[in-house]
Image (cartoon, rainbow, N blue to C red):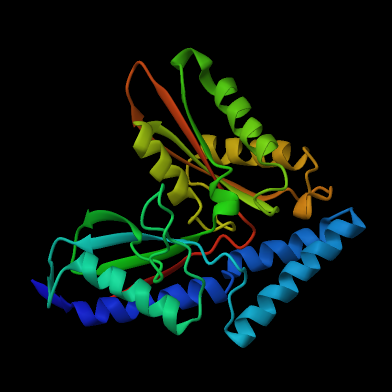
Length: 280
């Protein structure tokens, strides 16, 4: 049994919080550059250029890419041969969020109660998802989620008879409804199957998949390409000012589901789509 002390976990989470908010992932950065070359709208091209310049400056100056540094979503994969020592894993993760947001001068955006709306002043608690995996490693993904895009996400329990066409229509309608609100170009994360909550988690995990990696499932790869083309044909464009670059990618995750249901969740990510991994 491998032991990992909570101090190492706290330090890792703190560093990842700062990195995720200040450094655009390479796949998104390259995709923005590629889209800037192919964008037909001159205003859209200028906006993409500005987004890239903003990302360069944020990385150089170690400043957040966006004023909304998000609610901190954490995905934890913990090996079944790992023993966390020195305290509780969840306390260590929240201590890391607290330290990272303070050290990185990141905006605190979390309120204690949905009704009383009093800021916790340290961006905790995080929204933490756990998976038990084989081995003795601890993998942590930090994905700060701004609510310009989160508020545009939707979930629907379709009927099985709605079928594939019903799924496509729902996904496109979510993007139409979102319009310019989630700061396009967006990344569209889709979760299909499971239960209501499983579909939502699948859709959020879909945002973590690299844009430059084709889905291993040929059917899903084809569906993602078709939906990306249809989303971009909406011509919402960069920042909503029109153009062909409405989305950088559509990523889909699926899971077995009940014979009587067809849950579909769409989680919209803004152009920053912040996420970064680390392991101990």
